[in-house]
Length: 306
Image (tube, rainbow, N blue to C red; front, side, top):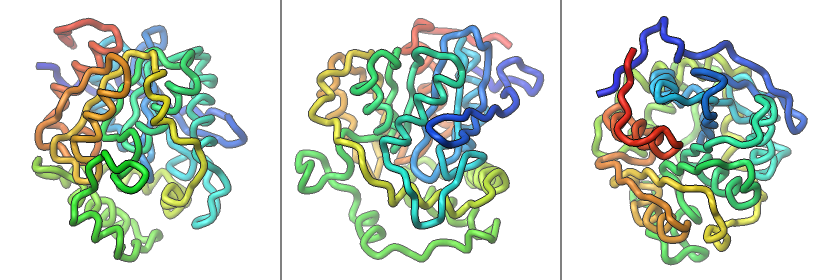
């Protein structure tokens, strides 16, 4: 079993680096050997790079990878926009991801995206295939929640549908404890059957709050538009693709993962038992990290020696 690298490990995080791209500043951070094959981690909506847990990124770097994470605009140390009035589109988020690669001097990278980040990763693979070495899609969908536009995809859970129809008021974004509580409540709603690690969520949400000058700006992600749907073009994807998906995802039920695996040529699907719509919880890291390590070319059955 792999272990969490100690604090003195070379796989721990490098200092943050600001990349200027697409007219904005993007806060980034890398783990591991810069000469190793690169992995770019792309976050979901409302999530700064902090949600790619330090230990997760360090263990992934320990497979022989240079792991890069970044704050999407309106989160963490990246440029923020007026709350409730974002002036950018999904295409800008796509350009930001490419800008991070450019900022690290990378012609291409292994792309790992979760939720909204998984949607952006699909777009990268379709529109910029030369920049994508491999594709890993976590907790995402080929077309969003099932509905009139995607009637073949299973709908979100009844509980989530009611929540979206009658959303609770947001937190007082100036109150650190309230914001942490907001993210913890969301984690409980979107989790599967694996118990929520409340201590880890509180720590991550608190760190994200402390790093962001305007925490409320993260909610802008729910308002952005633009971006041509790419589901009809998934068959064009040539990058080797791995789909990792929770069997208890209430937003994108497992049928969304099965659709991705069918529609992307040669894709491999690995179920994550009990996982909901969330970052991979610690309980499945020993499945997820080796799978990504193998998929990105390290080979099967690696052993981390620290």
